[in-house]
Length: 384
Image (cartoon, rainbow, N blue to C red):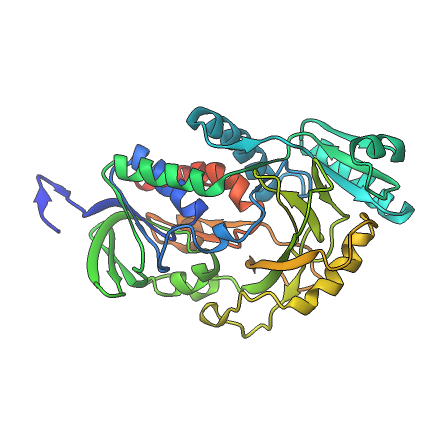
């Protein structure tokens, strides 16, 4: 649809977002409100079935991230926006709080340093607790002390994504699954896209947002004019989760001291009261590809989980864990290196007007998603 109305080119959509996960849907809902009808193209068979369906559904407070980083700023802003949005829509959520526990004096020093960072980051409701105070909150824990984070919570992420789909469609847009991007090229002040799948199509759009998660670098490489040097090298880290049979031993989320590549094998509780443990961190080979990723959870990993869990919960019964699910995280850093920040690219970064790329959007991306959408809108403002 390239007909002109006066001097203005009429695009099929004002915006197209590649990727139908929580971040992509949040961006599309914001673009729909700000620019007009927006299309979401999801390569998978269902929106929200990628990274967004394989996590802990935790609303992070913002404890861990270097002060001033995008992860820090967008997590804090996104968490506040998310709680407000969940309350406004009546979407199930609970601000249950979490304990980051130390099992010895060395870990206690790490947790105290984490508390200082959290305060520097402006996180509300953070304080250190001694062994006795922790025992009153969670009698089954073995700790030398813990950091209490009152703002951490859990929510129904799928209900939230469904609400975002409703926003997009209510604004005249669409969310289309099984529609991978084959290619994109600049066209008349916007972009012409070619989609694959069972019903290939050509689409024009005013602006384009690459929120393809694990496939974001691959999608960027399909955009004509995108400098190869602006596409980051990405690594994958797999994280497995195990469920717990029987009753929950905890009333709050329980996290150990952080580890390389993740936050350790932690205990989370869903809104139905079920407990799961994970994720662990398995760095996949550098040559791993999106199409070759395996989400199976080997049952034999339970032994490693039991060892990690019993450091803070010695009462874990034998044989109480069962394989649940696994997720894959997009990493912009190598094993052993400091965790990389989110990479949010606008026109100054790659030279293409009306294009935003989102790379390395791992945790706390779900929490940060409303603020990431806000950031994307700000980057596109000069081009629209």
